[in-house]
Image (cartoon, rainbow, N blue to C red; front, side):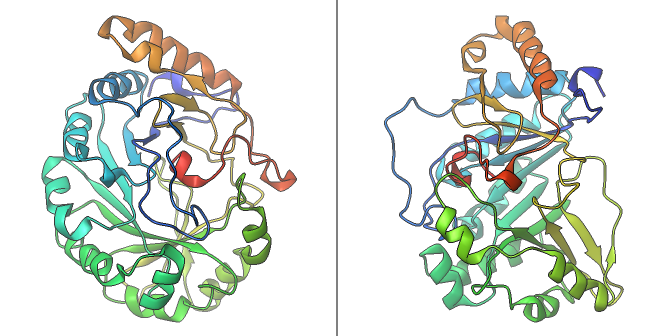
Length: 327
């Protein structure tokens, strides 16, 4: 890997999370309870800009890109963007995080375009709870979409559930049943405070330690983390085909293994999900002639990456809600 994607703390960054849009059609209680509202600012990155951005990151050693939102599938050109990523020399893994609303109808198209991994938000296995959390009666369609995705030969299909006290923190037995015969993983994400959810966070935040102890007591074993993996601590069990991941941003060592950078849907480089500044890359995405300047700007910014976030001090940085940067 290029030494240019190493920060001052020796962390390497083979993994880019690229937001394609801030728009999301869900109204999740922990993120956009009132729905998405357009702000009239400039449009999101176009395909030619995305192509130049991916080429620059790949030239610096990025090998995995995750397409996020908002909800990336609200973009009609999503299959073409996946094809662009697949055609970029150096990129080996192309992942997508989606709320699953179009999954049943379009997952085969995404796979054919070159998608290699898929994460789907599924905060509950109970249809009524799913409705209460997301604002939509789409549980059956999302569930069926996941079932179809599991037949398509993806490198991985994973599910994401934000863990919330008094909302879905009692569903572990149901997930055990779900995972017994399915080659997938459920990742429980600790609820994070953002700029506009302080009251909700105070009511529903629950630390993941108790959940992890339940797993250990039930015979689950912590798995070694792959070099280009995301932030989850993943557990396996000999009696279950599936796996359970824990994403605990408030854990003491969470930032030590950071291996990912982020670019917003408007082209700003973010060194941290909860960072206090962004670096505009979009001016350098207008022409192929700016490639060298673009790679230099990206590499230079890594020297400014902090050792960790400020969540423990209540510092949520520039992130008003997770849809604004893709989580």
